[in-house]
Each structure stands twice: as C-alpha cells, then as structure tokens.
Image 1: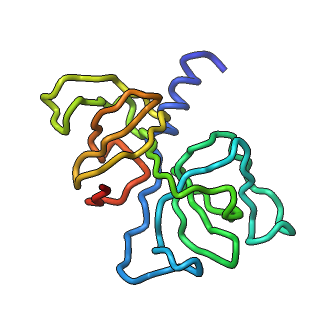
Image 2 (image 1 turned 180 degrees about the vertical axis):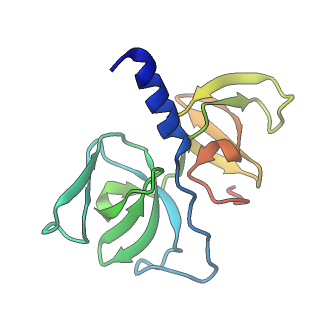
Image 3 (image 1 turned 180 degrees about the horizontal axis):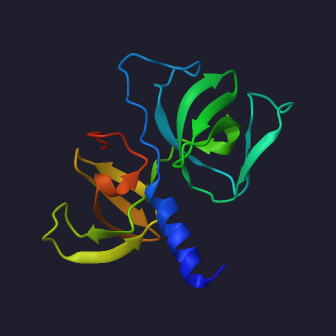
Amino acid sequence: MSGLSFVLVFFAAGLAYSQPLPREEGKFGASGLPLPRFVSISASRANMRAGPGEQYPIAWVYTRELYPLEIIGEYDQWRQVRDVDGTEGWMHRVLLSGNRTALVVQGTASLFRKPSSIAPLVARLEAGVVGEVLECSPSWCRLDIDGARGWVVTSALWGTFQGEIIN
C-alpha cells in the first residue's frame, strides 16, 4: 500500500466513529453505577471477549492503556463495552479504570489555554491522541496530554456525553 493510500484509509477511518449512547436517568448496572458510562483501559493488554466470561473467544486485544471505552452493560464482574468504532464486546472489570479519558476524533483539534477559540493555542492534536479528562463544561473539556494541559471543544472528542459536566 502506498503512503498516500495509507493516509487516506487512516483519515477515513478516523471520521467513522460511533456516537455514545444517550444517557438515561436512573439506569444502573449490577455495580450500582450508571449506564452507559465512560471508563478507560487500565492494562497495557486487555482482551475484549465475545461474551461475559473466559470461556468466550477473544474478539479483540487492546494494547493501549488509558484508551476510552463506553460501558453499555454489566453482568457479574464483566462489563459490556463499546469502542470509538462501535465495536462491542465484554471485558473483565479489573481491566478497566474509572479514570476518564477522551480520544481526539477529528483530523486536527486545537488545545487552548482557556475554553475559548480565541485563547492562546497550547498544541494541535491529531486524531487518535488520548488525554486525561480533568473537567468539562457542556462545550469544552480540559485535558492533560502528557503534561500539556488545555481545553478542547467537546465535538472533537469521543469519551464524554453531549452536554456532560465533569468537575
């Protein structure tokens, strides 16, 4: 595959991300935590299985710690998760962390010093960059990306719900 083809395939893949499920008030899983909710992968290698148990085949292997996932269901110690591409499967809860992260899904997103597009620019972020979510207003999230902190418009991210406020 030529370099140009790779760039086009990667760029096109970056545009096809799944929208988070709408958050329903009062819906909780077996853990007592709300569904759906976002978490991140806590291990350097995490198996996504076809069902809630080790007897089910491994469907995907994730090798990126802190990668955001959406929990959409629970069964005992297993969490039904969905990734940015819409791939669904099951992971054991020990592979997941409540630490919130978000993934840049647009071609390039700007990281600003303050939640304003006229604030000084901290960095430009390419699709695929993951940052720790520090706080969010309905339109902006403050991220920490390897020590660089700033604000990104929420429409450029996957890992938060529309209009979600995180303090």
